[in-house]
Length: 130
Image 1 (cartoon, rainbow, N blue to C red):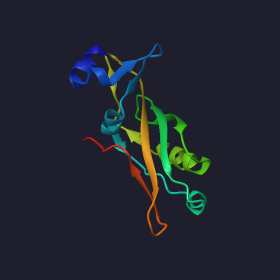
Image 2: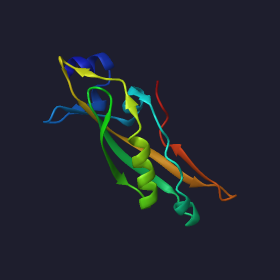
Image 3: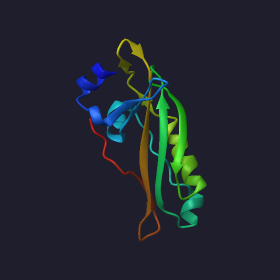
């Protein structure tokens, strides 16, 4: 892990827990993403005029496949489900820490907003860093 962090030059943005799962910042997680999917604004949430921020946490394996998704913050169950569905479609560039491949975990934030005309839009709360 130390070698990996030195190469990434981001020592304060990643940590490894006891299970050898590397937790990274949202910016770094987005940088590792090879494919992303945006959540859809749920019709039910739009009808109720619900807006807000949804924070999801995902974990992916050494092959770059998402293995776990949790919703940490959401103003609405429908929005949470939409984010979960989108995050399960993400794909990542496989990563190797030291000589062993490991899982990587991180949070992703989405903003749900309704404009003056009543149209809903979903955006990334953080820019994608490439």
